Image (cartoon, rainbow, N blue to C red):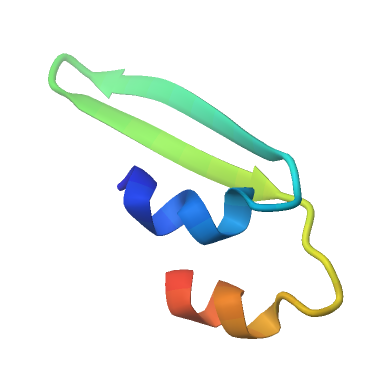
Length: 46
């Protein structure tokens, strides 16, 4: 999972929120502040 986030971490902050849903299930939310020239990199990750 974190290899895919590598392009986003180059020049910006990323906030990861991890929530436990069930005994064996978690949810990870990724929030980042993009830059004007990020559209191509963001499309690759999404």
